[in-house]
Image 1 (cartoon, rainbow, N blue to C red):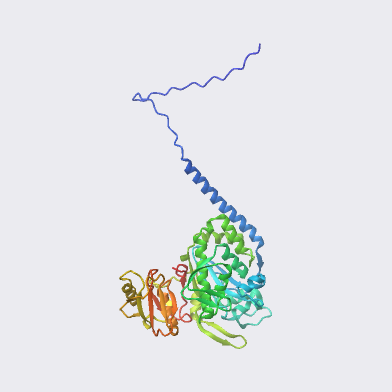
Image 2 (cartoon, rainbow, N blue to C red):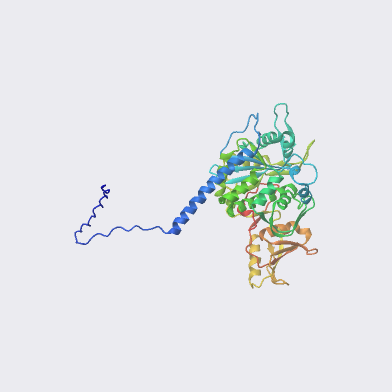
Length: 484
């Protein structure tokens, strides 16, 4: 008969040894981590890893799809490299890539000009915590440097692209600014509209109606969320005010600040799927230099995650003369040589453009407040608001009557600056002191402007007289360029 297998003897149970006091020790109890905490940690880990993985995968795949150019080919005698990174951002016409329906809708008829519609130097600081944007007006007087088979000659800066493409554009900008360009990024109408659409539109505000028959822009006064096509009309408009090209540059800067605010505040940069969509929209139809690859894109993406509107600053190259006529070139915009050099030196030395601004910031306006007469009317039920606004405007320098009255129609929701059309420049200066106010032309009102205070009133901002075409270039931070 077979012998059954032996069972392993059970391990002997150890009796707990008594302690000195005779009491038996208590076995340690394991503290179980709450399930919700485990789930939260796990979910967060997955999201972080997914963000990094999808972001890297998307950027790596798009790197191969970006159209490449060589804007630095055979360039000699280039400026010395500074600190930080300088990207030459150019907006090209590209209307030939837009559908016929969109071309009619957004007034993009005619043949493409094969020139740069927008030129900006975007400086990313060495610590990746600041972006400084300097706009170069498209009609700026420039000198093309001599090169192989080419003599130095005068030109409008936007025409350098038509004459010699990205290579001559970079060479001309470096020759004029003495700032070494590290990377080149070219955006056309199509990629611009796609980018705005994929972020869900960009909010802008205007104190008075904006109508431009050339682009088809037609915006009433107020706050608007612009999608791709309307946004293109907004940044291209040149005939909505007397500032022409400089006014257009300022609108482009305000729009860029609003776009940064939208991208950084809406969680786009932290959402892997939305980050993927934005990246595809931005990079899927641009041209860039060969060195602008995956590493640079991821580096910029990480920097942007820490950005806020106050991390960006915008300015335009200081201008000495708006209509500088050059034989064979036409009317150009002449830079102020000394003040422009100070601006570009700040870029080379990686210094904030706003580093030397006065602590008490004042909004630059065209007409000094001391030259503007104002009558305040209280359009709300708040008894003392009229006196408060009158005193605040007087403290800023406006020549108020000192005797505010009640508005005929109450309550008024939005603060209104009523003005005679002949005093429109003064009205714009007054509206700048009342953020969010609406300009309203009233024929026969005379030289005294009227402020009808609405329930939306929040503050009176300091303003200072400054001609935008003279003096130091005005530096505006991103958080100052929005609707607040």
